[in-house]
Amino acid sequence: MVRKVRRAAAEVGYRSAAGTSGLSKRRPVIGVLVPSITNPVFAASLNGIQNRMLIAGHGVLIAQSDYDPAREVDAVASLLNQQPTGLILTVCDAQNSKVLSQDLPPAVLLGNPATQRSPAAVCADNRQAGRDITEHLLACGHRRILFVSGYFTASDRARLRYAGYRDAMEVAQVAALEAVQVPFVDEFETLDLSATLSHFVPSAIIASNDLLALCVIAAVRRHGLSVPNDISVSGFDGIAIGLLTEPVLTTVEMPDATMGTAAASLLLDMAENAAVPRQLQVAHRLRQGGTVRNITQEQ
Image (cartoon, rainbow, N blue to C red; front, side, top):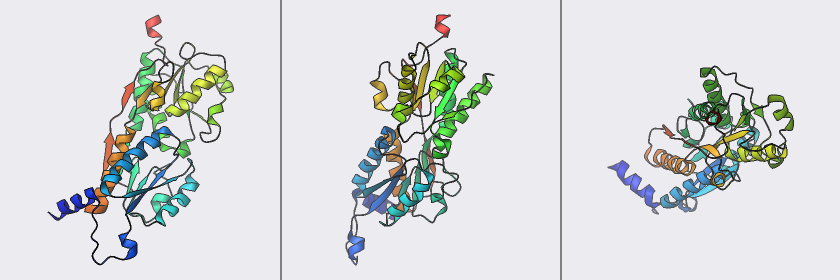
C-alpha cells in the first residue's frame, strides 16, 4: 500500500509541505545527458522524457556531450550541482564511461546497454538491428557492403550495429569490410567520401544512423553517382526527415520517443518507490524505402 501511495504521489507531483526547508520546497528535477540536442533521435527521446516528467511534477535539466567522453564528466558534474532526483544518461561507451564509475543518484541508461555497475537501462538490440539491415541488403543481392560510422569510441550503439553487420556477413560467407569511421560532429554535412568510394567500390552503404545516412547520400551524389541506381544507402533510427527525402530512406526504426518515456518512468519508479533497477529492451523494425536497389529482381 505504501508503494501504491508513493507511486500515486509521484504521478501527480505531490510533495508534502510540512517541515520542509526552502531548498526542499523547490520543484524536483531530473538531469538528462545526451550526445547532441540537434540530432532528431535525441530530440524525440527528450520530448518523451519531458512529457512524462511533466505529469510527475518534475523539471528536466539537459546537458550534451557532443559525442566526447571527456565532456561527459563535466556535463554530468553540472547536472549533479542541481541536486537532481535522478539521471537519464546516454553515454558514449557504457562499458568504459568514467561517469558511470562515480557515485550517482538513481540513474537510467538510455540507448546504451545495461552494465554491471549501471543495471537500469532502456535500449534496443542494436547488434540485432545491424544483422537485420545487413541481411536485407544481402537478400537484395548486395555483396560489397560498406559500413560508415561516427567514431566507435563516441557511440557504443554504432559499434554494436557494426558487430551485427559482421555477424550477418559471416553467416552469409561474404567478406566484411572494415568500418569507415568519420567525424560526426563538425561539418558532417560536407562529408567527402570520394577516396572511400574509389577504394572500396561498394554497391551498398550502411550508415550508423539516419542523419549520417543523409550525409552519405549527399556525398555519393557529389561524387557523381546516384542513389540507389549506383549505390544503395540505409541507416538506423527512423527519423521523420527520412520519410521526406526522395527516395524515402531505408532504415531500421527505433521508437525513440517511447524509449524516452520508458526511461523516465523507470527512473521515477526507482527514485520514488525504490524499485529494482532493470533493463527494458524495445523492439525495432525494418522500414524499406527507396534508397536500396534490389539487384536480384533485375537478374
